[in-house]
Length: 461
Image 1 (tube, rainbow, N blue to C red):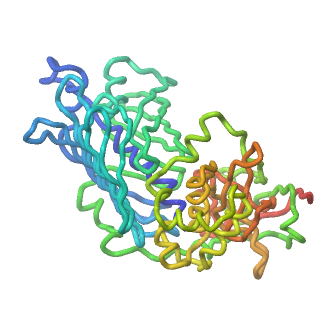
Image 2 (tube, helix red, strand yellow; image 1 turned 45 degrees about the vertical axis):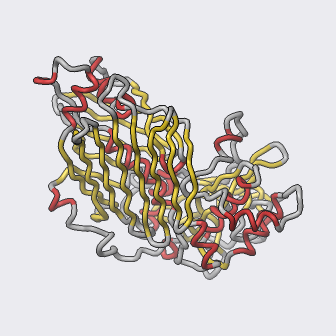
Image 3 (cartoon, one colour; image 1 turned 30 degrees about the vertical axis):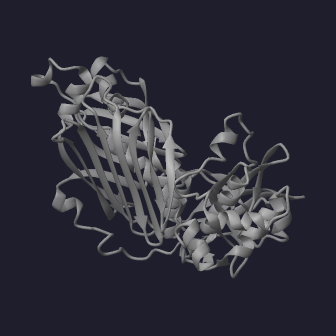
């Protein structure tokens, strides 16, 4: 299962945006150029998960021969239960009055996955290609992004005496969603040692500590991932792209339940209590006292565009997707999409395909592959859909909850939950959706067998 990769990719990349600022000999230049000049050089960071060294990040800023600003970031890591992953991002900005983004290159590679995005500014649009595995499609994106956007936090800090509680808003390139995203950081503390910022994005929170020169010292993501400034030797002592780490299996981290659930497919409501069995309390584990199945949120006006768009991981226009949809009766129903997705793949535990195209090529995958295929098919048919993550009941052997992925789809005027892996059109209440932060905390606690579940309340359809 690869959802922890997604939960950390954007958060880790955002850390590379917040770096350092000082003036001195560049004081006669515009503020944004003073900030950019102060960024010149490179930095190395060590990535740890729950105290285990799992990868590194390297960022650099240079002025090339064309006097353009070049920002490069390389991230190599392997999350628990995930595959070795390498992400590169190169941005080139003009040194003119507009400081526009001129070219962009993004790649995300792991086993069975290759995503590569190349873009260049052409008459007000970013034109380029998106490559997935051995397929390629043209891109034309109406983005607006420049050096001022890239260094917005530093520029805002430079221009104002920030006080604790101040909130700073900036934009960033969200390559995975082929969009410009928004990031908000709250200044928690400012003292003689520097600054502490809190960032929240897509269900994954992080706290970043910076020194007095706005240089990143460390960052904690979801209370599980730690990014620390280091030397190159310290940071790259572990390089998963060369030598993968131990193969943690998520199936080994299921969470025991105190009793078997009868007719669980007909459960309409379920509340679970969490029990800590070690010396560490639930609060110290960053876990709540209970969890419950929740209904999908309401459908907002912007949801149709957001959840029908093409993304780096969802190949909507691929010929394989088109051929599958052509076999379905029109209008296409949610039930038909669930059944078709289920029939396309064979479930293989602990062997994620890694991408929709790889899953279709091999005809097999894990729950994330089923869910992403459903999202791709639904969006390609013009039906809003999204992949969601959480835990679900397992009746095999001793009763427990396992980490799982399923879908929410907009039908009959509301979001509805479906599970293509288990061919469920009506989702039962044993599917409990979790935020990225809560998923990470549960995974850590389950890996050390510190918690179990007890049934507090339940009701049936």
